[in-house]
Image 1 (cartoon, rainbow, N blue to C red):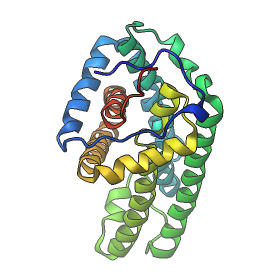
Image 2: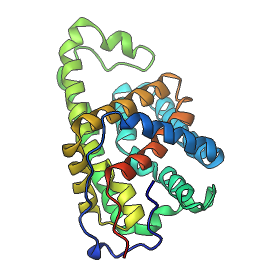
Image 3: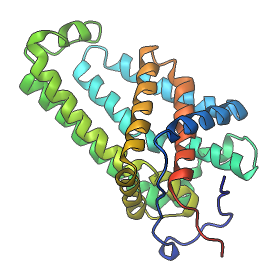
Length: 263
């Protein structure tokens, strides 16, 4: 496996990231590598897993009687996942370098390229806010009854008369999720590893999706399935599954992006 550069370059001096063609089965290897990273660095990895689980539980309890907000915020939780997983990327990066497992250096890793990571966070935040608003609009226009509460959500929403609502709601959600996935496949790893600027990193991510559509669809499906399992276990599954996804995302970056040539 290619080792990361020891010295970060100025983003203006960096070539545009070269994207590799990879096999459709690669996501299985990435998840396996993520599991190994979790086992090698359990304490810092599980710290971030508990953070994800706590956020999910907080969203659920705070908005227990306003599920239209909960669904939007849960989607936002997924949209902001690449930003929240920075510490997990750094754990994998440090393990590659042989720097050992330590939580403290990962907590402020965003400072390494704060300006560009901030730009990326703003982009994701704007998409999240638009999606949250779109979620409310879809509920208002297509839902046939009063807003559902959390306890009766599935029973109320999965009725035949709400079929049109479900189709529109998931179509809109899929659109936003696809946009976020396209711009975030390798964005933050590039910004952390190479000091890459935000625009170039997002364009490289779109390029990775365009060049390897089958592999990226399999990768996205794996992430969605594991995340759903995490939520279905009352968020407790997120404690383990989110660190695996975060570590695996770092290994996906390593496979998708050609390393910089040695000076």
